[in-house]
Image (cartoon, rainbow, N blue to C red; front, side, top):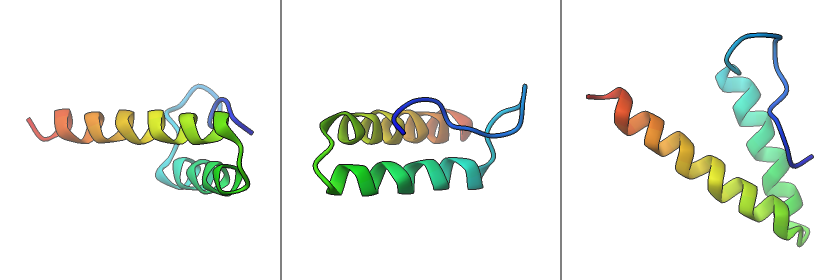
Length: 56
């Protein structure tokens, strides 16, 4: 499951796509998957950076 967010072709993933992907990563991380935990942290940081930059 760790990898790209699946969504529509050639478009930015929707908020629902990102939410589903993050929920799947959370489940894997809670089960002990280290790669999922790292991916979840990286995705969270990326989304926070986009949110911060979008407000300027």
